[in-house]
Image (cartoon, rainbow, N blue to C red; front, top):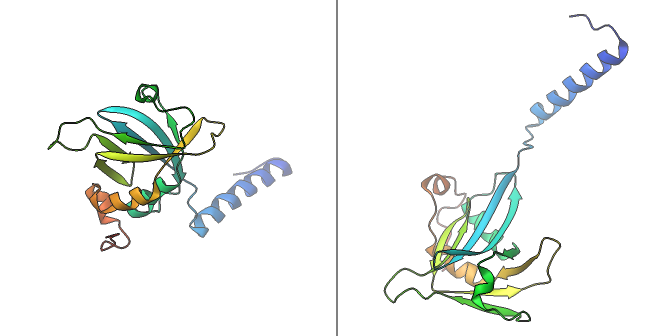
Length: 163
């Protein structure tokens, strides 16, 4: 193949070198979108998200719940949370003996159900996210969560427990 101009030759060589350097270095430039939903009695009341490079296992992704900020959905105002409350507790109205009605679902990290969940208000950011989950509760739910078999197979330390 004959490239006519020096400029074209430089462009082709630059693209080739950039592609080759990424391949040889084993770099992964892919990003994984990690979405999180909190629902109460079947209605999604909070949504949050973060991202990573796809390498963290389910245990590491679960720990994101300690830092993710959540945005209230259109269902949240129906909970009658005071506008100046520093924290609030979501409490399920599911009948006794039935599974908890508060569900935390973080993609690639698992899903947990509980009867109550403490939310902590943080300063609202530009995307209107102003809630965080209680980190102690995130740890308490760690051993009770459900994860997919494919995520379990990728655990770096399968015996990891927070009990």
